[in-house]
Length: 104
View 1 (cartoon, rainbow, N blue to C red):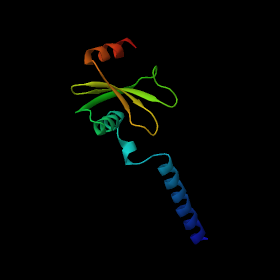
View 2 (cartoon, rainbow, N blue to C red):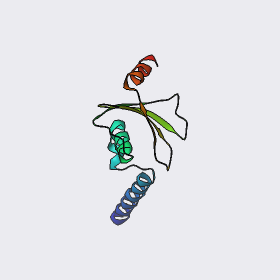
View 3 (cartoon, rainbow, N blue to C red):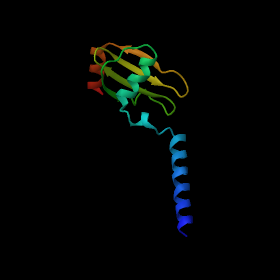
View 4 (cartoon, rainbow, N blue to C red):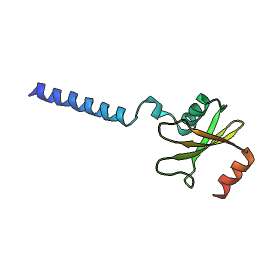
């Protein structure tokens, strides 16, 4: 009886670990959106130090494409994330992106 219970717990842990890895939950998921987005665009050659905040652009986002506005210390970017592709990054005029965020 004790062995069967222990075996079920081990099986359940394995199933949960597999499900979490398939869904993409890992240590990177613990990052905040600004940190994760900044890391992504840095790999593509854009400067973002420090990442200050990120806001989802719900108007431009679609079910298969998430669009974010990322504010860094000296720049702001619009980032479109497509599955299995590099992010599409557009540098924004810092002043204009701040005004847009205030009006919506």
